[in-house]
Length: 254
Ligand SMILES: C[S@@+](CC[C@H](N)C(=O)[O-])C[C@H]1O[C@@H](n2cnc3c(N)ncnc32)[C@H](O)[C@@H]1O
Image (tube, rainbow, N blue to C red; front, top):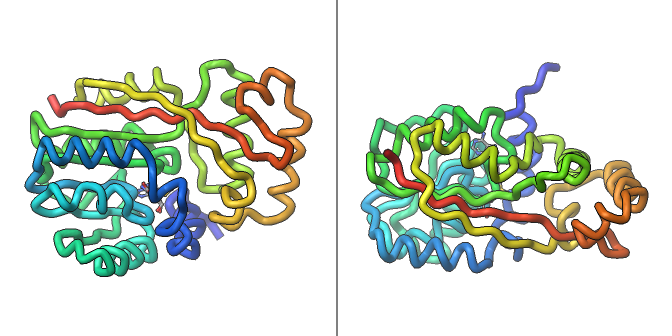
């Protein structure tokens, strides 16, 4: 059976849709509060949450937007977002099942596009950013938030290895320099970059995506066998919990 990157992501995320609605790491964060404040300032008529997962970006944007489209390639995720939006009485959120690399929206349809913790799964980040730019009107605002890789090669490789073992649909955590180059090439002007760290609790990090026991053991083996500098960089704890670098890129469509 031949499986595409999109099939892998659908297979990984579909069965776990509920876990992404309730996940503490996803449901809260200063980045969501910043997004909400940005939306309050911009008051977009139409906003897009790209790779919506459990819909937390859509819920942050909805009170300040005319309408919000939550887009994800997993139908189960979009169904979970519809149910949760109903529970929250956010009636201006609709869902679309589509890959970021091929969006079913007209050029310049949105005033605001935001994407959080999804781009590292995309089969083609350049193409996804090109689509985000195409559907955003000139002068519109985009925010991309994702895990970023450190610039030291050994730490970058460690991060990608544990991510791939945890979740076979992992494509790449890009470095900040890769993000900025790709954003500019896609037609964005970067306005601000914010960087912070996120602690991943090992048990919930692996449980959330259904990592099988042999892959959990392989991650633990990579962690315990890592160089001291790698262990220190990721602040790896005795139970495998560790810290990731995250960055938020705010950009304008030029
Ligand atoms: C970690 S979850 C997203 C979390 C969510 N954005 C939040 O802020 O809580 C990653 C999501 O990206 C989606 N995804 C993966 N590859 C995608 C692609 N190429 N296009 C659209 N969505 C994709 C997955 O289905 C999954 O729902």
